[in-house]
Length: 113
Length: 114
Image 1 (cartoon, rainbow over the protein chains, first blue to last red):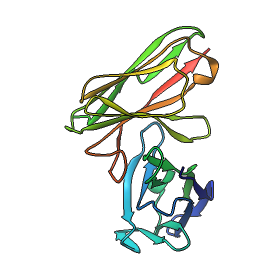
Image 2: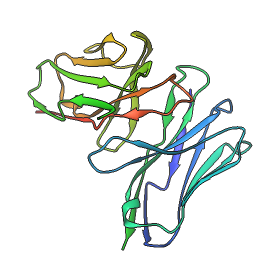
Image 3: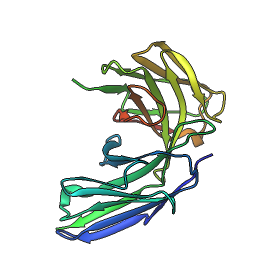
């Protein structure tokens, strides 16, 4: 089945700096790669996603890049703000086996004011 | 106007007890899920139902039994609770699924087994 690895597990940046979180996946047939943000005491919420026919997608301060050859994708947050502090999860869709989203282990982002 | 609501938010119980967590979605979605998040924040799918039909049943103890009375509800019943069942349980839904679709999560039920 699909295996998703996510790095780093924790990330601390100064307000205004950029943050980058990286994920690799194992199933070359995976074609959907969402990113979720989980704030304290809440459920994960989708912030951006990308499909395999696209190499990059941007939404205001958030961007995601996908390299299908290398089987990795990254989340980029620019001009970070304290409210960006949360746990971020990447995920990949498995096209074989149980055919469900497989989540990475999460990155705790702390934006220092 | 909560899209995916689950109750209770907190559940503290003794080992060996039986408990249920309820979930309802008002989004008109066809697919609902139960995810387990452990203390290290790992999110792992447990079950998925599409139009009341079980489509994903991960390797979880058979003490866990999901029930979907209709496509807007997916409840989770846990028998003979064990210490290792302590976790946060999230209900989620999607329009289609279970892949390639945006998931809408509830706010979670924190289960503590003493």
